[in-house]
Length: 66
Image (spheres, rainbow, N blue to C red):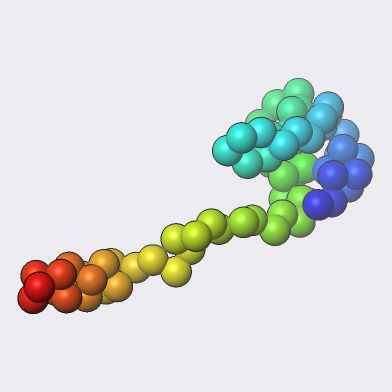
């Protein structure tokens, strides 16, 4: 994840995993952003990652024919 690199940035106090993602705790926004930019995050996009508007419209069209 690159947590050690983010924590090495002056002003970054901690890097935490939270329910909605990652939190970089720092003295100010600029240091938090610098730390965040060094993170290498691999997101789990979930079961609906490939869901698209076009796909939903196709599903609705197929359902309307039933």
